[in-house]
Image 1 (cartoon, one colour):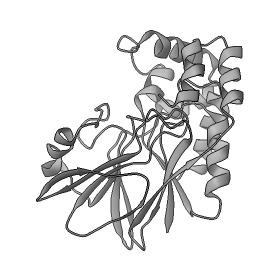
Image 2 (spheres, rainbow, N blue to C red):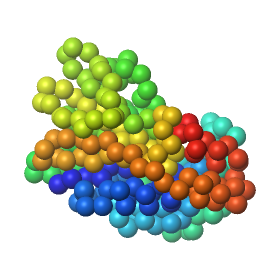
Image 3 (cartoon, one colour):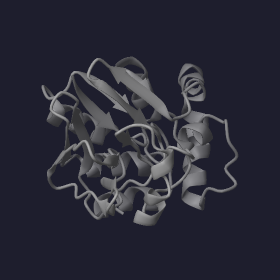
Amino acid sequence: MPYLILSDIHGNLEALDAVLTDAEGHYDCILCLGDVVGYGADPNPITEWVSQEATAVVRGNHDRACSGEESLALFNAAARASAMWTRRTLTDPNRLYLQQLQRGPLRIEEPLGSFMLVHGSPVDEDQYLTEAEEARLLLSRITERVTFFGHTHLQGGFLLGTQGVHRIQPWRVLQIEPDYHYLVNPGSVGQPRDGDSRAAYAVFDMEHQTVEFRRVEYDISGAANKIRSAGLPEVLATRLYDGV
């Protein structure tokens, strides 16, 4: 069964629509690694879509903050302003849905095997996995061959083996090998931060044991203009153009 792996949609409806169009026919099931909302100007339609279409979802830190489940003290000024706006904007059913999202890790099991979903890392849902050494320290804590994570907005991840830790390059199809463990980041749908402004996602083919990293252009101006019209911080609009 091919899985569409999405993460960090962040209320960006234009990016999500482009991803779904690009991925059409390539998946049977949708999984989400959290941060459904925050930053973007369409928290309600995004939340409603995820609640109806995603088979499994783990919560992200913005899902907690924007639904009132967490303090905003650690957020920067732009993130805090966005979270406060999102709190006011969310409908009661969508707020409740976000509050009830499951904390990762979440194991997905099927006849061909199993794999894990987390937002930050297998040991801390808020950990940013950006360095090889951080990934190496998790090796003894990983129980599945493949773990999908988000949070960093950086497509790629890490391959862990007896020879050390290596970065996964996201510009090729990744073949899962039996002698390694994989921490795989599909990238951010709604706010990439790797210098590539295109929406990012991945398709995991369990049968063939492959992960295909994909990018797609979307209507950035449309998403940015919605952010401005909502009165959200300008930086949340301009950063979409640069992918940072």
